[in-house]
Amino acid sequence: MKEEITKSEELLKDGKRHLKYGVGFGVLSLGAVAVFGALACPLCVVAVPGFIASGVIKMKQSKDVKKIKDQLA
Image 1: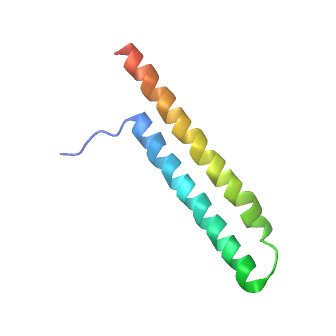
Image 2: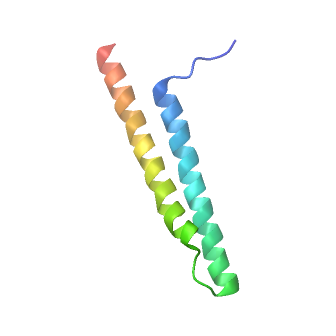
């Protein structure tokens, strides 16, 4: 039997995934700086904060959707 995924669960899952991507890109760019001694690539400078912020926003939206759903029930 397939479980129904609610909007809040989907947002929470996406938020966690985006946080993981942000941390992964951050570690990758930090490793590149340590190994090559070069500055971080511009993509990493933009992608890391973008993914982390997106993850935090999606997780916040997940809590808001769940709170509204609970109030209506």
